[in-house]
Length: 171
Image (cartoon, rainbow, N blue to C red; front, side):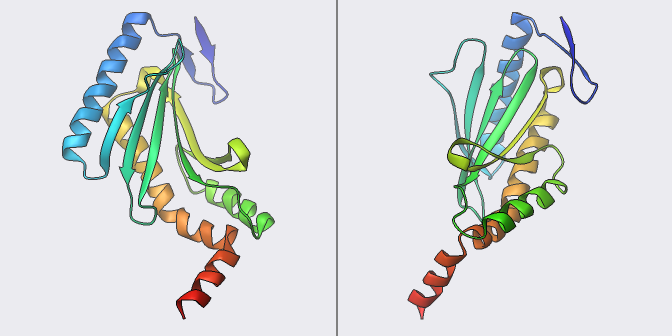
């Protein structure tokens, strides 16, 4: 079965054997990346993944945000990916969300969005048929850069009173 996406791309339903092959390819990439890429600290396959979906949790080391977890979810048509960025803002809420929308224009391959309890996530998806080592590297790089370039400044906007309190305590 072939489906047209919102972008006009054609995505087809992968067969069971194609999905199994793709799962092995993702596992190989994760094994190799864990050995060669200092940004990755660990990964695991979700033992509770639902039927029809394969999931991996990948621990990533950052500088601005020390550690974050990427989640890959492979389905029959798409590989979805996401990472939790931060909780819902407490201060400057309108300015915070305006900033998220502006920052979305500068990120290719991922989008800031709201998740559970209005927490901020970065999400994206690609057709499963395009998944390979280069695309997985691109996804990792995109999400890492987006977190690194935006985390601290978004914290300062959305949690401004905490930063003021912290400065007073340090004096």
